[in-house]
Image (cartoon, rainbow, N blue to C red; front, side, top):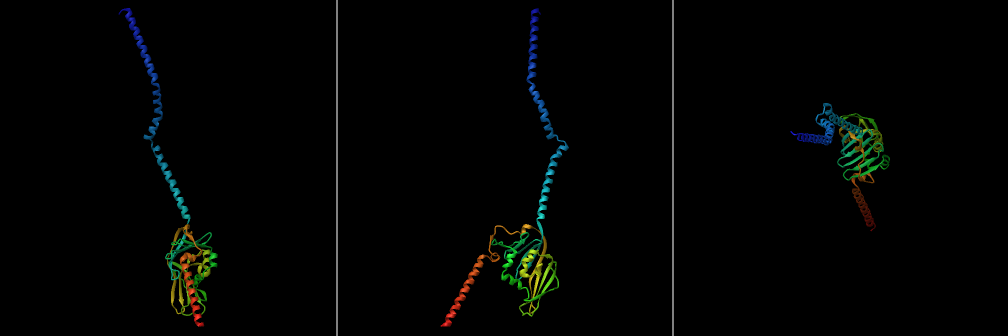
Length: 317
């Protein structure tokens, strides 16, 4: 090869080598950011991937432990709520009775509360601590009358007194009677024995059978005392038998069943939203019926007065 041709070939080789080195350097520089990103991704994404798809047994148990703790907490809350509800309940004697004067009724008696419900009339009486107000209410007419025990006893109606007194001889002494087992409950008997001769239709003797275990709350004893007497309202009567002057006997009150239950305290609270009345009679029979009775009495009295005037006029003629 001629010297100049060899020199030119050598120069071209050097130029080609220079271009190749430049190209490699540029390529290396331009790929640097991607390499950094790939390295960062390997540090960030790989642990996440492994945490999700390649958990160790200990790591896999953590969510289950959390769920278990939450379940235990919910169970504790539920038990606490049940405990509070149980504390709000009271032991109550539920007594189912029937009688020719008082009719069918259900009594609910505890140490600090009392309720009587008459299903045929849909009529109830309730009272409880601490205020011991007496509430009379009718669930059909949604009427209610509330008063204190003292106020009620001051205006105790003649009808109520007469109903109670019809269970006793006119004059009597109280003597112990023979106890009986009634509706599974032991009783003690108080006999009201007449102290004077009686006619055939008058009460000669009355036997009160009172439950040994079922005492009335002291405030309810005060409520019943004016009409029934102190001795007869310390414990709940389960049966009342009468004997008349001619020897006839009749049952005035009997007990069908007695059970001990747990009931919420609110069971003894008066209902809300009922219309207030001026007396327990309005609750029992309704103000409309009372007005009709008063109207009829007025007509009857007016008619009687007219008849008397007419007879008087005729006598003068």
